[in-house]
Picture 1: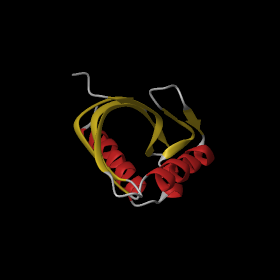
Picture 2: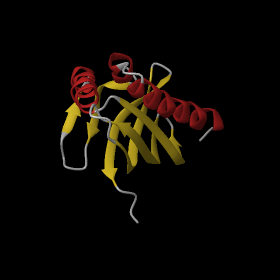
Picture 3: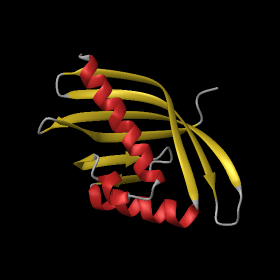
Picture 4: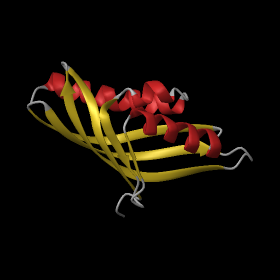
Length: 131
């Protein structure tokens, strides 16, 4: 496991946060592998870049006016061309009616190196942080 790989994966996760918060859903989906998956804690699954992009539009444009994804406590493990990562998430948001809130969650992700670049293979989101 190299420090460069860990740094690249952490940067990828930060890009994930910024792109979803900026509403760049196509660019957000492009961070995933072609068959990448996002799994919510209720089992709802979005698979492939087209579904991922639609998830961004359907959920974030319809539910929130603004969001800020803040990830902390990164633990990244690399094994060749695959890796796993775990983060705490604090999601700050404002709804169209002006309601503000914060949600806590845990990300458990897997990554694959594709053509020399790290991509997100799976995101598993669980609300709450296990307190």
